[in-house]
Image (cartoon, rainbow, N blue to C red; front, side, top):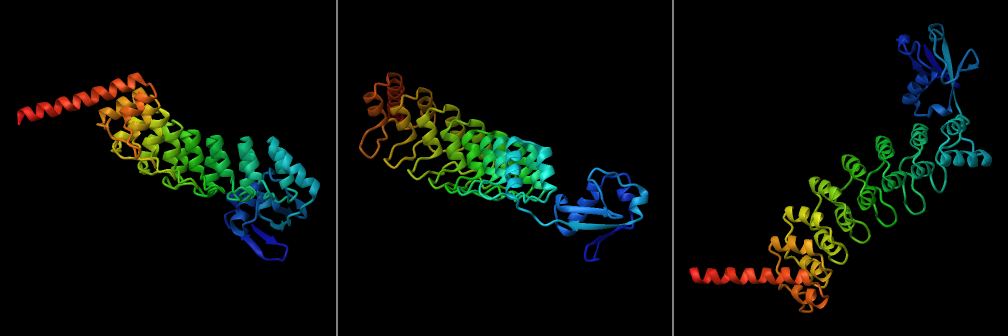
Length: 346
């Protein structure tokens, strides 16, 4: 069995006809695609001048004959392009395939077809577009790719399809937000896991110097924080205001994340803010009782002041956080007693 191009060139010469016996024409087109790199939707296989349907089963008699392959050029009829965009948006997979067989270019200008399918969660349409050689890394004017959109939405299977199609897991938008960053921001754990396996850079930062770990800590996604740390994300990565993941978690009162970060050997004494405030200081200011308790257990210093000379004790008293104030005073008392006992023993 041979497949000829219009010019008479032998594109495929198969001795093992049984490879395609009982299989649809689509399978032979897929094989031709591996040779000429052309989507099956632009291919026309002719047998005795008859255009074979993609689902037509190849009989043994057909496999003894020669086929002719036509490759259709893209056409850009405005009405067809409009219908194609609408079919992608509404998730009409049959209509999308029908228009692709008319040699519509799947790479729409502006907001890309893959991006539209990803935004609406149409996984079957997205897979058809990728099979039609839609560019997985095409971006709109804001730099958003289909992978970034799917990651933001939390569509696990769409992210998987795009990564399988070699979508770039580190391609960022105009704000330098990567797919991993937006998935961490939204707390989409399984998407984060897929992106990390797809070689996403766990320490890449955006225009505000915020890493995926930082934004997950800021938004209270403890499971994402744990996963990123497991993948060696930097726990001391600070943003443009010099605030660390521990500092922002303490500020927001995310006690479970504070615990995770402290277990990762994060030093509670570090002044992680441009004003020289420690995580204990900011937790005390905002009355985060359980966070203060955790930081005290990690030997946070209730007397370590910021650059204005105000300590956690002072700020807790000023803002009227009685429970926090009592915790800090007990810590100071415990420290003083320990020092007295130590001096007596000496």
